[in-house]
Length: 263
Image 1 (tube, one colour):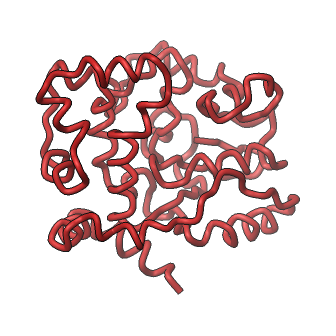
Image 2 (cartoon, helix red, strand yellow):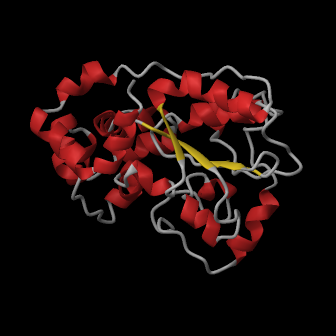
């Protein structure tokens, strides 16, 4: 999440929808001021260890989160987001309504977010939980290695098996000590993060939407790094047609918003 008071907008980081790539470009632009704006920053693995000057590497004006940290206010995911509440990164994926409730933004502040085909996003979630996190440090490696047989079955499932288990999964204590801790957040619709006025960009269109956004704000365009072309259309076949249809039925609003941008 990036709150740009300087240019009156908030970037909402919807998980597994290229939000990190967009955030990095915005951090690199003139849209973020170290004096006026606020953000929890990005995970350290996105930056070389020697690059400590990058605006996105660490929290920007972290003191703005102090009143929330000290309060009794609870976010929906307070019990299942691995960052402690005292770390600004806890608020990285805050929703629009949560930001308003925490008085970090005023209701009505313009917001932008990314969106993708619900099936593609599910496949990204599946890959993230079963494969991607394995390479992100010894702590994660140990979580996979020490998982109970029931948990390991989910963490090693193919896409179809994972869908059948993931959609209705209830976490037990063992699962909560593994990457499955992210389950409840990643099951949320993408539109859960925005409000009725949020401007969504289909990830296929980011390469043209972001330059237009920079131009509308009167700042220099910044090249988007780490943005891979979404080739998931060709990979949807690894999920059965019945399950693909079920995902679209589960997330109809996400699909409609994404589909209207496929011109």
